[in-house]
Length: 243
Image 1 (cartoon, helix red, strand yellow):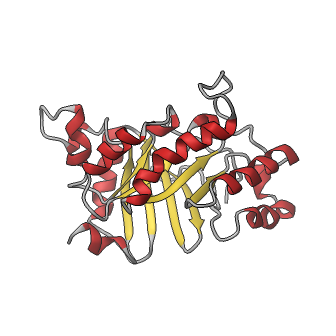
Image 2 (image 1 turned 180 degrees about the vertical axis):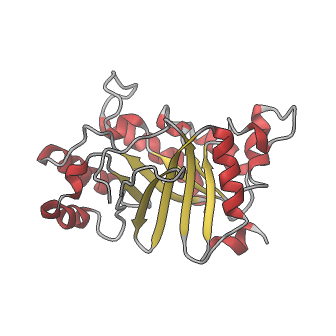
Image 3 (image 1 turned 90 degrees about the horizontal axis):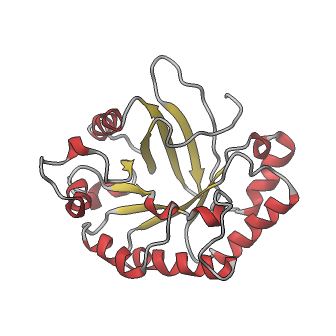
């Protein structure tokens, strides 16, 4: 079954990043060959290197050219756009930073490979007026792109604010939930944006465990438009209320 056949109406499983999952690649595979090799195993990926720096459009085009038609990228927003980085940013102002990021992901959008841009906010990004204003600006500046939001502070999910906050990104929101690790299972971050659903798992004992689990799930694909990126323990933590 090809990538195009598995894209619509089925669960899609992928990993976070393509550089560290050595068990997927033949011995001696060079770093520059790993993305192409990755696409032989999974139809989608969470691109996490964009969190640390905004790639040039030329570099993004190079990565896109290494993947087949129908392959999908979940692109993680740059840390300067989500409040993680408090250091001086290499851009003259915030709007210029956003524009550089948009110029980069526009390459994937034109190629039909951009599934969404994931804005993963830090635990200290709580539900207060200044942060709501940031979300409104983000919605305005990213209006032409699919966007998913992941909150890691429980204040966004209190009954008095949950629906009000959802209206900020109506039709494109991402609801995140938190569940404790139980019975040896990885931690679950489930989400929904628009008509799609997604789940982000972490807390596997290693990157090897992550990719093995993903391979197993890939063989057991079920119906439903769901993206499941899997990342290793410590790659992300959500502050939230157990459900």
